[in-house]
Length: 241
Image (tube, rainbow, N blue to C red; front, side, top):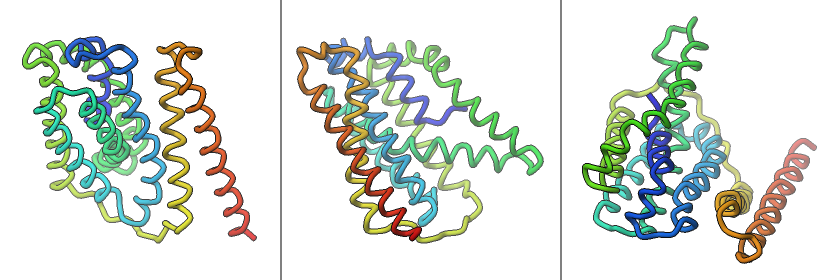
């Protein structure tokens, strides 16, 4: 089965036109929903690498699953585009860990000699998200309009949280990976990626010549990401030396 992160994102992406009408938004505005998911998901995937090595994957997943469930529950009482974008952002944070965690669980379900088959099954199952979203989304919208989608997402988040709490993975070795410089590099990388995702998501919808912030965002993304890469490169050279 696909992870709730992948499934929930595909539900929203497939129903953008319906959500546009329900939320009373224009096409460029509702396009921020998938963009917000990608913004946080990409950034958190980078943070997750070191966090998993120092604190473990389960702690990261539990914390952001709780956050995602709370934000989704609160959104049920608010018919607002801004709260919907907040849900997508929280979803991207939780999704960074859920996809990896789901693959780990799949590996544990198979004997050691079939671990490669487990990887294939885990990666293949994630591809079912879009066709399954096509099957279920229409019925969910008929139940309670846009709230049907978010009730389904909330149920997936709570179910995943319960499974993570009950089914524990074998402990892994922990090493200290975070350094003070990481706060600076992540502070440059995260907004840089967010600006780049905004450009790639909205740049194909709005007209560049009539939307000056697209060019400003692209220039800012290049400057921030380049600065982060230079700092990482120089610190790596210093450490190696």
